[in-house]
Image (cartoon, rainbow, N blue to C red; front, side, top):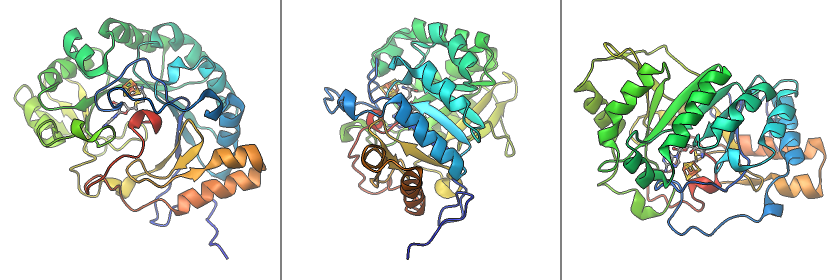
Length: 333
Ligand code: SAM
Ligand code: SF4
């Protein structure tokens, strides 16, 4: 007989996994070097995406199991027209303590207030450069729209707005200090994220990988970094430092180089096509959409979630010869 999980969403390694990141679309209006392979054509068809009702149903069952924190992501979640409705329905579910958003910010300007009103509490905005030319080179997008989106998010009154930057040597290391200054001026934490092998293999090379240690050394040329070992902002894995003179907070996410990185992992992912992914850096997936559409009882959905939790690997596989079977845009960051 299959081992039953305790009700408190503990995985086999003793980690409490109560955070579900939900990709509501694999589509995006940008095409970041590190996320979407050039010429990518693997889009899921619209009917293969979970509907708003299906997403909300999964959240209800997950909350019943003990999940408490939820994040809407993608692709770009704000290209989906019903994102405000999905947020509002999720916020009404008992047990849902906090809903966050990961966005490239391009559509946040007109949507921030409505999302806040619907119950969204935190927003992470990707910002890989402050130079518009470098920003366009990395993402294909328009920096001015993103800056307007960040302003709207701050004005909307979210509990927290964080900025995310993926580190790429030879691409955006010149931007790290300007980004740190910008973040400090606006009172927003900046998180610097190591590049993970989640697009075509030629994007992650020895040449363009920049470790968090190197990023820290670059910032230390401008200001002193004071460790904040007890600082946790939200549910992420960042290690925070305060800039002594500039005053800002910078978080480092060293998924590739930090020992024991996975020991505090607290999340699973739901892809836009309805697969539960226990780990970003492991190919294992569990098909919730099949259950949603063909055996749709709450008990059956709960079993899939529990099976995924039991299968959560101890650590990611990125440091071997890992080859993604889906790019990041199709998993959900
Ligand atoms: N479109 C939204 C955005 O850009 O924030 C949400 C989805 S995106 C996949 C979520 C996060 O994953 C972003 O912060 C992005 O920078 C990060 N990301 C994407 N590909 C990555 C990679 N290969 N390595 C590290 N982080 C990555
Ligand atoms: Fe789109 Fe976000 Fe991926 Fe960039 S990181 S291509 S904005 S999903």
